[in-house]
Structures are given as structure tokens and as C-alpha cells.
Length: 153
Image (spheres, rainbow, N blue to C red):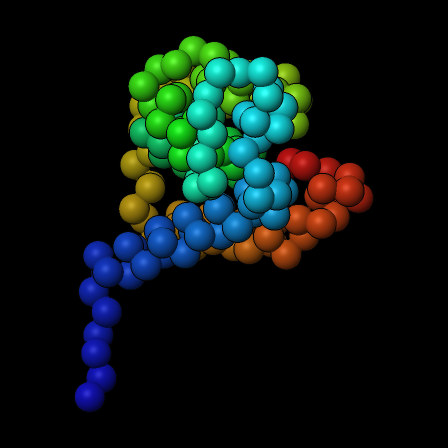
């Protein structure tokens, strides 16, 4: 018996694959440690052992959703604290991204977020296929990107 996959299911599978690649890249780059704890141990946050990838620019901005430069490994408590607008954690993540990616890249993401009108192509198969290709190339070259042999852009 041959099953035909629906367009909706194909898009969902592509999003799952892209999100997994995005997370894999962020974990490969940041390691398995909360970056807030690593960079700002003085912050009064009860860190957890559960790690997640936080989006510096909100997940609601679909233009930056799969941009690995927008992702940072944090513990679940830091992610929750940011979600509840704890300024110290939000600013720490902003500073981590600024330091890691450079101020100009971070500012470009922030300005893009301020001007964002959404991403009409987010559920477009061709757009998703392009994101998957880019994320696969980045994942396959993450060690060279980390060492500076390949520019981080």
C-alpha cells in the first residue's frame, strides 16, 4: 500500500526537520551549558539541568525563526524567566548574542524585528526547502564556523 503525504503534513515535517537542525547547530556551537549561567553567573536565577534553545528575537518573528544566530542554549528556568520578562535574563541573552555575533548582526536582527510584517513564505515548501539546505550546510560546517575558518554569515 502506498501512502500519499499531504501538503500540510509535508510542511509540518519540513518545519520539524528545520527546527531540529536549528537546535543541533546551536548546541554544537554553544555546548551543553546554559549560556546565561556561563556568561553571567552572578545573576540570581535558579538554573535547571534542562537545556533549551532560546530565540533572542521572538519566535513570533518567522523571518528570524530558523536563523541560528538568533538561537542561544539556555536552561529552562532562564527561558521561562525571559518569557516572563525578567529583564536581567533578557538583557543577558541580548548581550550574549551581541558578543557572539557582533553588534551589527544583532542590531540588524533587532531592526528587522521592529519592521517585521511577518513571513508569508513561512509555510511555503520552496522557502522551507531553502532553509533546510542552508541549515544543513551550516550544520555540516559548524566546526569550521566556530574556529573562524569560515565566516559566520
